[in-house]
Length: 102
Image (tube, rainbow, N blue to C red):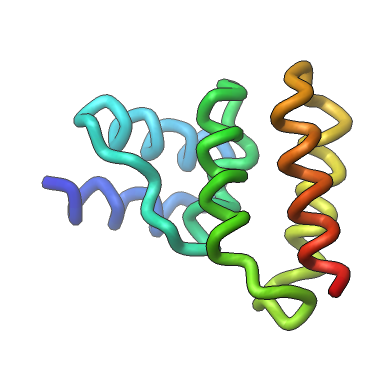
């Protein structure tokens, strides 16, 4: 079942589809896999707890400026930080932005 749910998240092309797939995955008790593409999709979720989970995962998988899609990720991080109400989310964004810079 987990693999089916992850496949649904991989297929998601819009933020709404990604949110639905993430909710289904988490609803079954699974966390978002530690994969850059899947964690990045979670940054558009409306629930800051999901965003925080994604950011914590990204901290472990981001390898620096050579990370695939680093520029796109930097842009997403800026947007997340601007919209975040949680200081924890903003701090995680800052940590990732620093990691992506060096």
